[in-house]
View 1 (tube, rainbow, N blue to C red):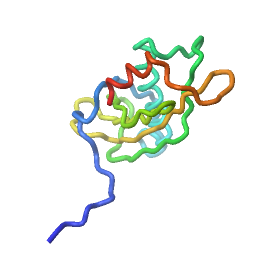
View 2: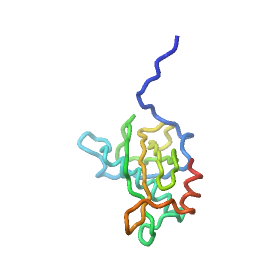
View 3: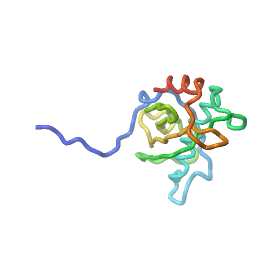
Length: 148
């Protein structure tokens, strides 16, 4: 007898992610229910990935010719996060295309083994002026390959 596979999303473990960034929650992140509001999680996804790319020297938000536009995003929530708390964002790349990247981000309460939330977003990289898709710059692609 085989067990039916559940479609219910499950938390991920730290070992599923390649790099981590710490993010401090802010007073304003909490909502009326006493936990971080869901929209804040999406800003943490952007913050974690873009800060990492800037630190690696492959994203220049002021002078660069190529920018990433989000075309899809999704998040599943497993346990609440709240101020004051440090969140550790794990980052990995699930798919690397010619001009697009699927980033997956896991948000962990500091020191916890499983994600409080996890999700993804897809960037299509475009020419900053024309907003038309452009191949990933070689230096960006090289850094992203380390996150696969």
